[in-house]
Length: 121
Ligand code: HEM
Image (tube, rainbow, N blue to C red; front, top):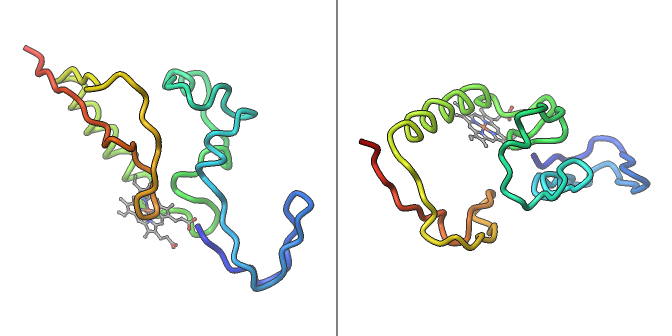
């Protein structure tokens, strides 16, 4: 998502010259309370009522170089998560929330999202 500017750009009063390197911060965007009230609360049902706008949720980047595999990746996730959720009950091994930490270019849960898996009968 990193871009080198071919022309000057003004963003929210900040003047960026041609040649500058610019990148959106998905982590800052995704915890913006103006878009997501109580952004750190685990509340997946917040997605039930509305779909996020194009530039409110950018795990796949955006614009002309947006991820080519986004649709495939989302379809794969639906299949895998559906299969796991139907066959197992997942319980966090520690109820305390985990921090997000950097790993390469991504963010991951600091304790590795460890779960206890209980197979369904
Ligand atoms: C959860 C899974 C995935 C995530 C989070 C992800 C995320 C991203 C991001 C952030 C970019 C950079 C977009 C930008 O510069 O604006 C990207 C580019 C790209 N992704 Fe993915 N991706 C995923 C899966 C996939 C899959 C499954 C494929 C192929 C089957 C794929 C193929 C590509 C390609 C070819 C680009 C380069 C597009 C370009 O530069 O024009 N990605 N992806």
